[in-house]
Amino acid sequence: MNKPIRVLFATPEAVPFAKTGGLADVAGALPKYLQPLGCEVILVMPYYRMVKQSGVPLQYLGEVVEVPLGDETLRAEVYQGFLDQTIPVYFIARDEFFDREYLYSTPKGDYFDNAERFVFFSRAVLRFARHIQWSPDVIHHHEWQTGLIPAYLRSIDRTDDLFARTATVFTIHNIAYQGLFKKEKFPLTGLPPEMYNPEGIEFWERINLMKSGIVYADVINTVSQKYSEEIQSPEYGYGLEGILRKRKEDLYGILNGVDYQDWDPSNDPHLIARYDANDLSGKKECKKDLLKEFGLPSDLEKAPLFGMISRLADQKGFDLLAEIIDQLFTFDIGFVLLGTGEQKYHDLFNQIAGKYPKKAGIRIAYDDRLAHKIEAGSDLFLMPSKYEPCGLNQIYSLKYGTIPIVRATGGLDDTITHYDPSTGTGNGLKFTRYDAKDFLGQIKAAMDLYAQPEHWKKLVRNAMTSDFSWQRSAGAYLHLYRKALEKKRGTS
Image (spheres, rainbow, N blue to C red):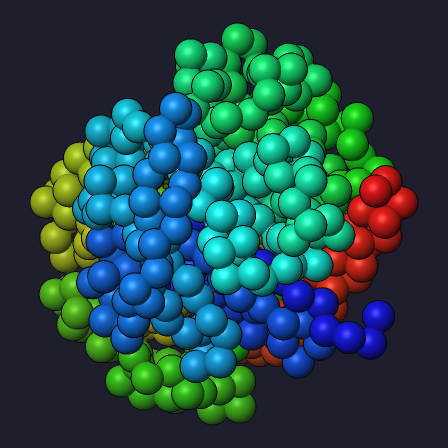
């Protein structure tokens, strides 16, 4: 095991190139921490319009890869960039599939041809590896968009010497999004017909790309220990709990880390002032700056300021927030929100901005610069999620001394310890039942703590000294790769 483990990272998104959620943060950070552990990593992802607009320098390689899709063979061009200036990132380009404003869906719904787009991408990943004759020890692939990769390695590409020793690790970031398509789309995959059955990728007379990853990968993991347990239950498994229980010996939970190179208030280039746990004076300046950014009055500097950065979806608990939001604005507070998502929540928050112009700052957008400013300038951060595989914003918030109020589910439960005033332990506040009154109760409890400087200082210090760095998580992934390789050797 002394020679480097060669890892091909197949991901539908990665920062700083393209992002819709936490998956991009993971794919952009984890490879950087695997390298020092003796892994040789390359990334492969689609060449979206967002990648073109990212401003990151990329080079067209002049390479064309031929990719089968159903009865046709389509051509993909390849671009190259680098992560952290050292890790090669290859982009699969085909404009009719990937040159679009959004990655997977518009606010009105999913793209109609997502099956074609990501069957093409999954096949292109393997065709590209063959094209450059790069033989991976492990393909670490993420989410439903790459779920077909192990199915190809078990069937069409089984006899390819390049992949003879390749193990697969499939990471589930959110099991609610499964890549479900009409069964008539199955021929697009080029997979043998016998794989379309209830033990394979068939799911209630549809094809399910997430299920393909779960069934055929050597090892599966999800992004927190609690979520790996939750998804084996009907409440959280979204119909896949049975197959996950069947594979529970190969199912692991590894909490996402945070890239403190990007998320640290002591050296964050987006902030008007820097600060750390020993000197919080810069945080006050960041709060002033944030209020100015949203055009909110300066008298909110002394009031608790609540922040949210989120995909605007039911999963994130916005129905709970909608239930209590008018009551929330009867208090002496400020509120800022950044995000995009479902149209009903775009409408709700635009109404809120109009109704409470002196208390609410709303930005319906994706804006990384502003996200950093919200983390630094807010006093409290709201994450009342219905479920949350890992969550990263609560961990960012800890580092920035912005106290998370979370529901005790998935990674939120694994990372946030409820503050106990009698012992001075804990790094945030949490509630258990998915209930608007319980959520409001914790908001009120947080406001009480905010009014008691002794407790507030202790709580902020506890938060800022919590450590969720990628080093620990990267070590766990290395262990997982070795398990996958052992399993592959045992079955091949």
